[in-house]
Image (tube, rainbow, N blue to C red; front, side, top):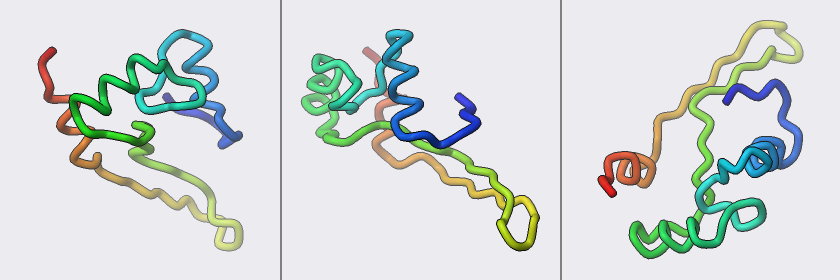
Length: 82
């Protein structure tokens, strides 16, 4: 996903609307999905990750790019074979 704004819960609400709930989302997610990741992976958090953020610096007017790698819990779940 590449959202254009950062409105509160925007991604979570849109994903729920198209039935692609985010794992660990207790407000907009699905309880059975959250239960599965808690039991199988001991994960009690929202699995939403921003791999990069870009914005213009308010004073310098130059592009700032922030990048972050995935946490281990994401890597573990991605590798898991159901």
